[in-house]
Length: 84
Image 1 (cartoon, rainbow, N blue to C red):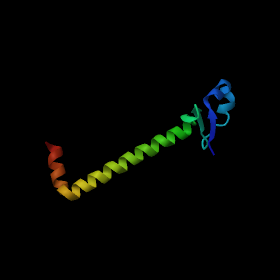
Image 2 (cartoon, rainbow, N blue to C red; image 1 turned 30 degrees about the vertical axis):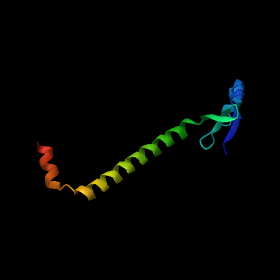
Image 3 (cartoon, one colour; image 1 turned 90 degrees about the vertical axis):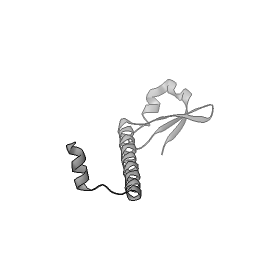
Image 4 (tube, rainbow, N blue to C red; image 1 turned 45 degrees about the horizontal axis):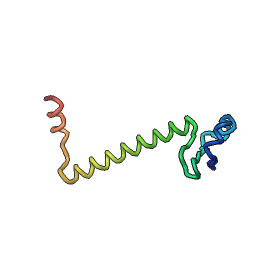
């Protein structure tokens, strides 16, 4: 469960950082509105991997749609392109 704290709590940042782990973020507010999130490096890395995977899947889906609309390229055509 994420912790929600005012940004002024960063005056004692060691206490705030103790609440951050691989599964728990700390959200900081400014004037009562969400402003920042503090997360572990492990969580940030996992988020980056998920974003990259999502991007690849989206690209593959767009490619499949285009191929179905415009036609697939045969293996022979690809090999000919690679030779040139």
